Length: 436
Image (cartoon, rainbow, N blue to C red; front, side):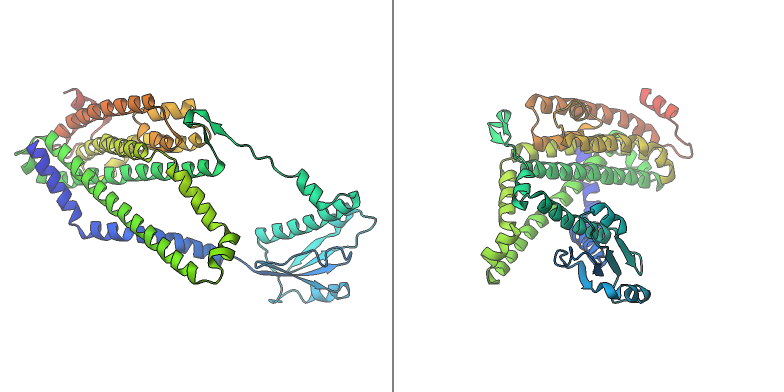
């Protein structure tokens, strides 16, 4: 145990003292936020503001087509139709001309057939759909008038039915759509974080083993410690690195959230009507309160406990596989044929967990969260929705037992493979090393 501790300490200090670790740890959250902001700006920059001139021969649409910040309607005389079309090409002041024919005998089918949009360049699909939607709404209102039905009556007929759901298994709490959405969001975040961390730091263990093997440093180290102690020290050292980075990111996120919330509140109070008019219009306060209420209703101690246990066991489980791979090959190119065996189960668990959102207690969710190869991500995906205690206990027991077994198997491969050079390892040879 003393040797394992020394190797763990060495591996941890070696990793955290690197400039790349410090820079990545401090800048990663900022880069993620900046990346999201850039993507948002890209979408914003690509938004178009279209100007459409409307030739309304029926007079039905004159005061009905409403302009907005993305689409502006300008009514023009029907007498100018030909001149407008002839001058459209190369005209950068307008994007198109919407020609609405005369409505004869309330025949809306002929109106649809005769309507056309003449453009001087390619027009966006969103803009075209907006024009179609605006025309359809005007025609709908006109048909309602013909039927003698008031619009308020029709809206009342289309009014959706709100169904309140009471969950007796959860102390008769109400399951709202917002609460379900919050659980779904939390589930996806925890699942994706676990998936990414296991792969990123598992590969780091593999590269560390491969680097020491290629530099022949391991031959000197093996003379002082057992191969199993070296492997476990590396796995635990990188585990501490992952946890350190995780704690720093969580701390930065909490501080950032507090600062942003305080800054937003102070700015809001300085805006005239900011506490009432603006906030009532956007419903931000109400939405934030509902989301906070939904989060507080969750069993966070259990969620955090399950997340930590399954993250650590899952990481050690897959890191053992990566350590064995790193010891069995001579270069990173050869790792590709083996890493697939580690990545595929995780991907199966992650993508299979997307279907859990509609039925977290279904048979697929149960088996994915019980089988050790997929449980590190599937159980974390299920836990915000609530999981019976016996299923959590069973899953932990199976994952713990499988992790110990995998450490034993990886240790067998590591013991032989770490000192092998020049021979390309095959599955048949790996099996001999395990049996030996």
